[in-house]
Length: 275
Image 1 (cartoon, rainbow, N blue to C red):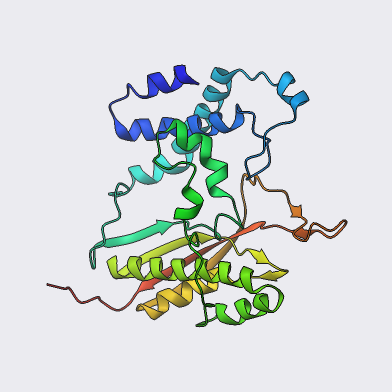
Image 2: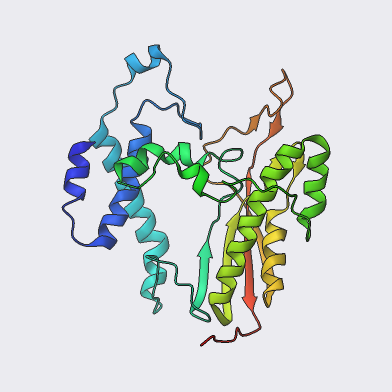
């Protein structure tokens, strides 16, 4: 792994380097002692560690070839046919700035839904990301609120969860507060006629499935957008098990997220410029 990283660091073209870091990040995960098919950070059993001896270079170049193949076949043809400027360095909080925003926010708070921080810890450390082991507290819902979220479509669902666990409902409220604030910030930066495309999953909490896709459409509509469509698709490259046991009771399992929802909205009202 250090050999691969050494040569990647010598690449001066940042776009090429970013592309090559994708298979590197996957290789870090696959060649570590982390259990496969888990989002949380669990070490392999001792017996499995003794038998684990992956060919790191072989894994990396296999994944690199896959990335290049996907890029060449599914992305490059479209980029060659259009004049596209992609801005991915820093989110510019400027009114009426973007023609389109494509993003995939966390599907829930990192501590209780998809453990983004744990899943990405090793990769983030290799990539030199600051606070790699503290990401869960920085992401959406990382800081728990004191009051339940009580507006819009999601309020009734949160109240139902509160009947089972008030503490859990507060955690959920924290996530939707942060997601809503983020949507408001992004909405202001999109031009009239511009589009937003959000890819999200609808998590299940205490047996209740939360309509995050509808929440996103609702929040953008509050900011002068119209909802065009929501496209449903199966989750690809799923690492989480298809079922888990949220109550930790024997034979009581529920399905985890298997679908993603692609929410598309168009801005129909223009934001006023501030001086």
